[in-house]
Image 1 (tube, rainbow, N blue to C red):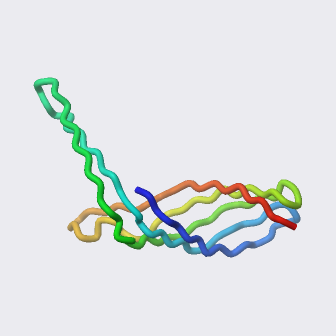
Image 2 (spheres, rainbow, N blue to C red; image 1 turned 90 degrees about the horizontal axis):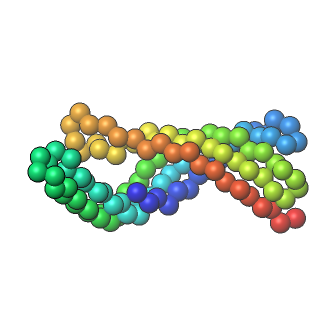
Length: 111
């Protein structure tokens, strides 16, 4: 799945070098590719099916939190954890699927 994500993060400074980042994140599904393998074939044949679905900009939303570390005046690193709160399979009864992601950003500030 390929998403265009937009995080809206607040930053809480711990000291001159470290800060906490947290807030909501919105993702727009651009496309998704599903590959299905039939592993139950008894005759040794392996049936592969591949389908591609346009995302039609389906919305995903959730919360993200992380720690930012400033290396020097221009460079900072920020790992974050994202967990979706929208059930992606809301059309199917008794089925649940949520997006979870580990994100990493490297930033350069022009000063």
